[in-house]
Length: 183
Image (tube, rainbow, N blue to C red; front, side, top):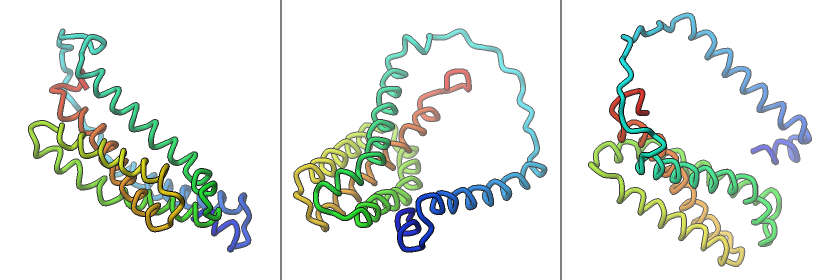
């Protein structure tokens, strides 16, 4: 959306960024008005349970690795995808729309995956499906040859995988710990 605002809206890149700054400021104002209605929850002091150190927990390291890989793939995609698509023959505008397509495809799955994850005793199947979607989507982008339909399908798959991996990363803190101290 930023590129069309900059190019077609006559705003330039500074005006395009200013548009998002204004929207963010409006959202901040709505959020700030809610603070006075927010009641601070008083939690009973919990004794710190002596348990296994997080540094020695294999599960904590698995979650850390999963979340790190999720972040790496997402931020590399956001940063480099437009350039990669332009090298495959898409215009800057088309590459921007494809990036938006990937991000919009994430929206419904950011809501659905946590619901699914909470219903399963183990999330291994969801992790496996996520990895497969990433592999198919990224391989299609690399070897797809710049075909618009194939790129769109691959980016939707990467978007679904991105939403699933982010949601799973956040859910693991809830599903795999018993106390706030563990989390």
